[in-house]
Length: 200
Image (cartoon, rainbow, N blue to C red; front, side, top):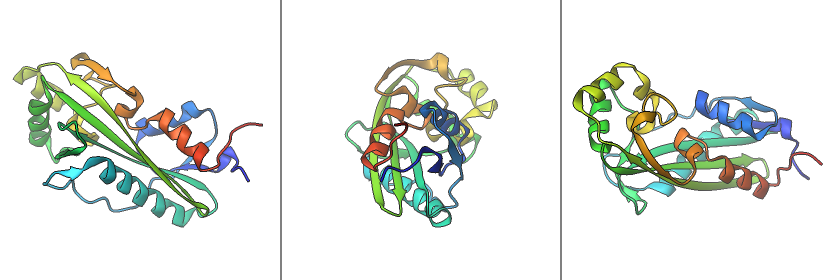
């Protein structure tokens, strides 16, 4: 039986994901996952598998508290490696770490991966999405000025494409919403695969 739209739960405290999921046009309850997310590994990883597994862990924890609902989990990471095996740029530990990330990303193309998971009592469904982002060169004083705004600190890769870093985003190949943190088209398809339907 299709799951009614009001039973969608977003297992994320990200205000950007909260805003994006409203574009589905259905009621969504926001209940951030309490899963204790591990730090980004130092060694290269299978990025699509890594983000999908983290999204699943987050969604499972929230489902344990809302077992009758359909829960959506997500995890976004950044890497310079195109092939899906690479070292992750997680959220910066501090301002110095944010500046270090931006120095590596500036003038290069990097890849934003988001894993999404949809879980319910009936089953689990996962997927991942990748978007290539071309970052224009940044001068040192521009990096430091941007870091001083505080915007990079809660974002994978240390920047927000939809925020003050926008003037340095010279190109995007793929889903822009994925860069913000929630690939809506992929999510819609995954929800349909899970049996969710909105409307008659």
